[in-house]
Length: 151
Image (cartoon, rainbow, N blue to C red; front, side, top):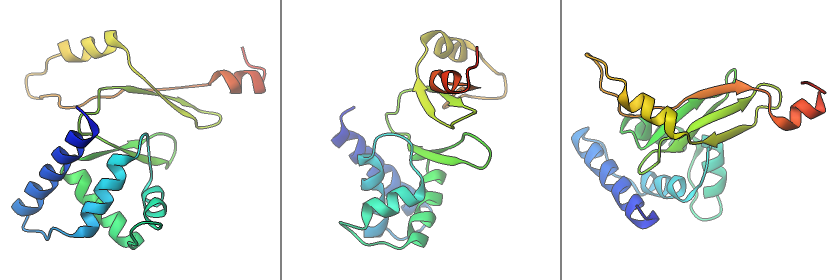
């Protein structure tokens, strides 16, 4: 799905969600969604807040409240990488991928593995339908191994 189609689909999901929940559709929510879907990679609310300050001023509270709404309608997903570190990423048309997290420096690298994807897809549960999955691998990256002289 191309970026324009992805953004259009995200706006439709948000509009439908707000309508069902009887919430107001605001320009602030739309601009925050635009900023998120223009951003590649993981982000924090402050990342989006700071990016928006040049083009469209919005309060931090509005950004944080909008994140809650976007989580609820599944337009973003939260990742809890290390300790209390929470980052987000957009979900529409986001291919299933996994994360390697260095326990020394905290670097997060995304990767895809067809075998893992197939194993999860082929795993069925009688009382559960899988919508989205990710695997977190914790270890030590190549740079930290070298820096700390680890084998």
